[in-house]
Image: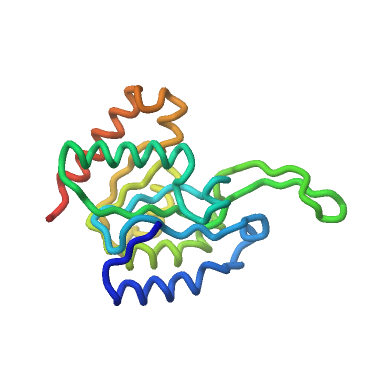
Amino acid sequence: MLTIKNKKIAKEWKDHSKDWITCTRCPLHCHSKNVVLCRGSLPCQVLFIGEAPGRDEDSCGEPFVGISGELLNTAIEAVISTQTEFTYAITNTVGCIPLDVTENDSGRLITSKLRQPRPNEMDICKPRLVDIIRIASPQKIVCLGEVALKNLRSMIEGTIYWDVTRLRHPSYVLRNGGVRSQEYYTFIEGLENVVKGLQT
């Protein structure tokens, strides 16, 4: 769900959605059910950027709604409960689910496997991400994983300054013990440090 706080942002988001919700700029759209844009609050203090939508996100059209999203929500709520409330939004490097697909001779899908987005796919989707960052106007950006960080760095080198922090992707935390693991507590600590530096 997306909460928009004023009419100006609402107009900008309407224009953004109209431009991207039916995007066919790259081949990823061929096997996606939805273009996944953003959830949270706009504008926001913290913008989380992940890698790409998964199957749950592709089905419902919102980022981080599967088990990785549940862990991220839990971490955010934990930080809010011990520090102070902050506004945030969540998006991804690309808007469509990246799949390796196998088709039969008639073009019918046989199998599909999740993969990382390719550099050319991320390049094509960069204007969407730049526009989301502009609309969100965050004080800080949290890249969830190395793919998101590398993509953002390629966008901002020598041109724009954003306060960027990298945390492990929630899926990595899940693979390494979940909410009772040291990886989770490290994730929480990193997020707490991000929130401490926010201007009220």
